[in-house]
Image (tube, rainbow, N blue to C red):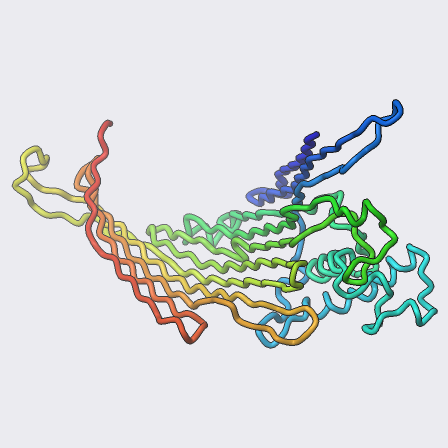
Amino acid sequence: LYLVGELDLPVELKPFKDFVIDVRANRDYSTNMSEQYDLVGGNYNSRSPYEYGNFSTSTIMIGTAFGRSDVSGSVAFEQFKANRLTVANRLATERGIDLGNPNNIDANGYPVGYGRTNQEVLIPAFLAAYQGKDINKQKSGFMSNIPLPNWQITYRGLTNIGWVKNKFQRVTLSHGYTSGYTVNNFQTNYDYLENPNVLNTSGNYPSKNVISNINMVESFSPLVRVDIETKSAVQFKAEIRKDRMLSMSFDNNLLTEVNGNEYIIGGGFRIKDVGFTTNFEGVANGGRIVSDIDVKIDFSWIRNQTLIRYLDYVNNQIGAGQDRWELSFQADYKFSKNFTSIFYYRHDFSKAVISTSFPVTNIQSGVTLRYNFGN
């Protein structure tokens, strides 16, 4: 039996003129179920029921997006570790375990059966910590019923102001946010089916489903962007992007965290009426070509870093990362309506954060001739 549930909710809001908010929320759930039966004495008996599937939903992590997170430590990660005891005590209480009895507390101070590495303890503690939620309000389990909205905001109304309108042809401010939570695979736990009240080899009560890892991603694309064009066709843009990816493995209790920041500055201008004389046949105006040169310049700085965090002892490590600078220059000149010459130059320099890796520089430059057939 194969079941699929998909929910996609796009909404466009226009609170006032030239201000647009695109909101989207989504949730995907799919599961495969199989079961075998044998016939004994006219009765069908279930044998080896098995289920596996995946789950994803839009979420919001903005509450922890700007907290300290580097190789020396992470505020959200420390909160994750602290949340575990609250979740463990709640699950133990729901099972009817007497927390006042010292025999029911393990060597680490956790209820017996709900230790600090129990999957049912880790998942709610992790989600609450990185979503910036109160752990007492975080539900148990790995699935959430209601997807949280993401958004894209655009505002073009500054040109309605008198002095701005007189100087600028276009002024656009934009901001975007997307975040998602994904369980790539969950499957039936046969220990749970056999006896959910018997401790497993790790000293924990078996969870209903086995999950290897969960992922959370977040992207401010952009965090903020300003796009300006003056009346004289001079363009300027400035943009900041920010993203992170979290992958929590329950096989080895490691958290892989990738943080990225990108800063972009660019601009463009037009040199009008640049002309020259040519002897090529078919050129109008007595062999004289006059056209504009459109120039674009962009500079970006990208920094990303991969951190590996161990759950139960302090040993954060840098797994990968780099600083990258990119400079690009392009100039377009139209010989005719269909024929364009493009000169370009791109300079890319990257330096890895790991000392064993060498810096890398790439330079590309050349001229492209483009002809468009047709009218």
